[in-house]
Length: 168
Image (cartoon, rainbow, N blue to C red; front, side, top):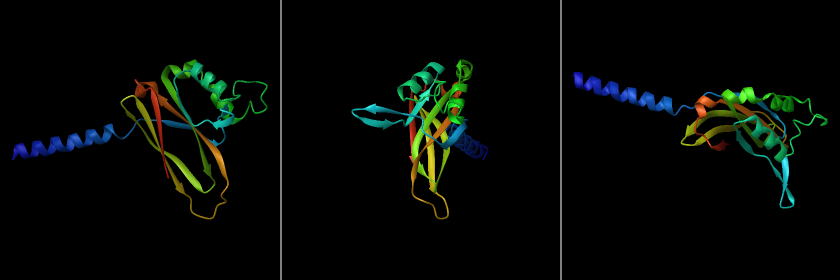
């Protein structure tokens, strides 16, 4: 009888450990609003920014330059916007302990979008995003939406690739 109870305990304990390991890492969504991070010319057309995993202020500034994001340009008319002010707040001190994920996607007023969870698999950080239709009657215009997600360096050691899984 003792062997059966110990076996059941070990099975339940193992299942709990597996569930905890796959439940994801802690994160903070610091920006979640209608906006555009940037765009750039590619092969004669415009390409809209989609996502990035950023581990330093130098990478962030380089990303802004690449995508024509004027967050660090004091002459830009939107220099003091909420998004640009937040982007500039991520300095070297922030990146000593944390990394950033910036995601841009198209959405509409009738769609509610939330980060479901974030997990790590091998060298990939996976952001699971869920979109669902809101109740009521909504117009159908589409617009760009930006999410900035903060994650701890401690929880993302070895991560080199970002995967965004957007489910509708």
